[in-house]
Amino acid sequence: MRPIIGVSGIIEIKQGPILPGHKISYTSNDYIEAVDLAGGAPCILPLTKSEDVIASLAQSIDGLILTGGADVSPLLYGEEPKRGLGRIHPERDNFDIALFRAVHELGKPVLAICRGLQIVNVAFGGSLYQDLNAEDAFYMKHVELSEPHTGTHTVRFTKDSYLYSVFGEKTLTNSLHHQAIKEPGSGIKVTGQTEDGIIEAFEADNIVGIQWHPEHMAKHDPKMLQLFEDFVKRSVKGK
Image 1 (cartoon, rainbow, N blue to C red):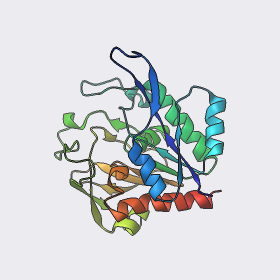
Image 2: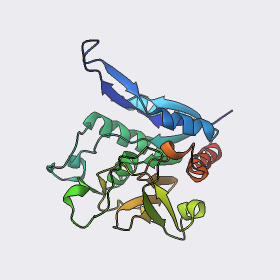
Image 3: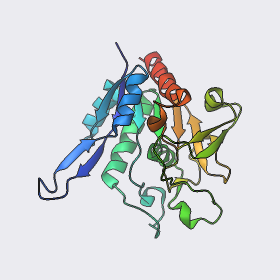
C-alpha cells in the first residue's frame, strides 16, 4: 500500500453568473502528479474550522504537504499590514497552522512549499517580509513570468544539510513569491539562500521547507522529483 500524503487544500469562491459565491475546495494538480510519480497516494485535505476534523485528518495521513497560495496575514506575527501586502485568507491561515501542528505533534513528516514554508515559520514564532519589492536590500526578481517549471535563479545550500545531499552546492529554482522569511522561528535551521540573502530553504525536526515550487518542476528535473520521493520514503518510515 502506498503511504497517504495529505495535500493542504485551497478554497476558491466562484465569480460570474453561474453559482456566484459558491466555494470550491481544490489544489494545483501538479502536487497530485508529483506525489503520484514519487510513489505516494495523494489526498487533498479540505479547509475546516473543526478541531476534531483536523485531528482526524492528521491521524489519517502519513505525511503532509503544505501548499502555496495567498499571503500570510501579518497579524499572526504581530505586524500591521503594509501597502505591498497581497490578498490574505485568515481562514486558511488558521487551518494550515492547526493542521501543521497536529501532524507535527504526531511526528509525521512535513514538506512545506512556498506559502507552506512561511506558515511553518510563523507557527514557530518567526516573521515574514510582507513584500520584498519594498525592501531595498533584495535586488533579485523573485516573481518570475516564465513557464512554471523553468529555473530562473540560484539557491545555494549549506554543506551539512539534507538539501545539499540532493542538489549539491546550488541549484536553479523557479520563483513565484513576493513574501519571504524575515526572522526564522524557533528550531528552524536555514539551509538555502539566494545571492541577495533571501531564505529559500530550512530544515527542522522532520520538516523540509522550500520557498520555490518543485511540484511544477518534478516532471522535468529528477532532483526536484527526488524531493517528493524522499518525502514519501520518510512517510513510509513514520507509519
